[in-house]
Amino acid sequence: MIIFLYNLLAVISIPFVVSYHLYRSISRGRKTAFTERFGFIPASELKTLAGSEVIWLHAVSVGETIAAVPLVKALRQRYPRKKIVVSNVTETGREVAQKIAGVDLCIYFPFDYPFAVARALNRVRPSLVLIMETEIWPNFIRKARALHIPVVLVNGRISDRSFRRYLKLSWFFGPVLRLLSAICMQSGEDARRIQAVGALPAQVQVTRNLKYDISVPTHSVPEREQIKARYCLPGDVLVFTAGSTHEGEEAAVIAAYKAAKTVDNGVIMVLAPRHPERARQVAGLLAAAGISYRFRSALHENEGALAAGEVLLVDTIGELLNLYAVSDVVFVGGSLVPTGGHNVLEPAALSVPVIFGPHMDNFREISALVLAGRAGIRVADGDELAAQLQALLKDNDRRRQMGTCGAKLIAENSGSADLHCAVIQETCDW
Image (tube, rainbow, N blue to C red; front, side, top):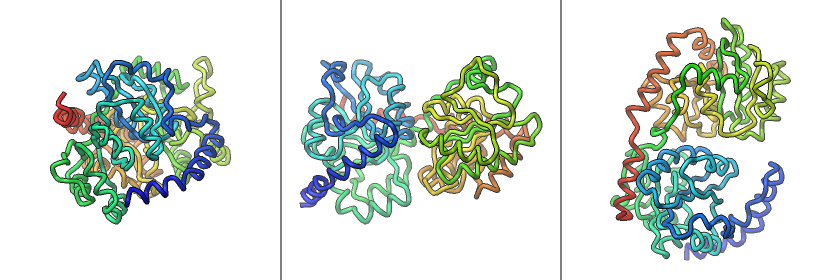
């Protein structure tokens, strides 16, 4: 009866879902993905999977896709003959997925309508489905179970806000969770919460956080100079990068930067909005503040370098790791406004001190560990961001100490991909 009502509401929602996605595509200047979202994956793309067992990994957006990289790498090493398909919901997530080494095919995840998920599963024909971070789609999971396809929830977590919602709807989510073959949660608290929602204790294992298995390149001094030249960043100026910023916090970041421009040798800010299509809006804030800027997409290596006090405004995706690698201080956005925060491990792994705001609900464990490991600083608001930024830019020794602590933190907490693969091996008996 519950599933019948769910599917009835799903069918009623089709006109609204189609209208919303059409609006998003048009407003962002992107092609619609209706064919794949309704399960019509082109046969020409599926040719690459012919004759092979398939592992289907679903990661909803950019953050989940980046977190999945260590798992993709581990799966490719252990099962070199199997094909790996990655699905996403967002356009930016798909663009990131297409750049991951070892991925054979990228597709859009189907809408959770019975006919759409059935068509997608029958066309991909996976031997295993992995779902990143507590994406619970009842029809997809039920259909996979009916086709005897094991489904494993990987890198699972439940935030405080989500937990309250899941508990209220445990009568709905509990039966779906019990259809999963295994559930891999990031922490003991996450494991407790998923069981409170309805998962069986025998299903649940703690496999730590895949984000600690982040693989970041180590750059020599000449390589760092080459990266700086690519972004027109001079070698003798400090670089402050504000990454993954959201609407409502760029003004505070810009104000902090203006206050910090008086440090010795000057400073350049790299400002990378979480959603690149907002770059024009952010450019308006910079112009209003009287700050000169250049768009990343308009840079050319043969152009002159940016001057101290200018801003590199990033309107592209997939470049934050390179920019973090040549930064002296990083602020990770989504944390001065209540959006749950973003991954602070990337700059920490690159030995760069990291600053973040108070709203880290989605990264509570990670942010606490970064603070305890003295690799980062939490600020309460824009004023404190300005003060801490200035203090760090003026203190070379403190920046080096925090960077060393960050690299050590990552080294001590890695190994999640191996734990996940052990669960997968046991589940599939490969």
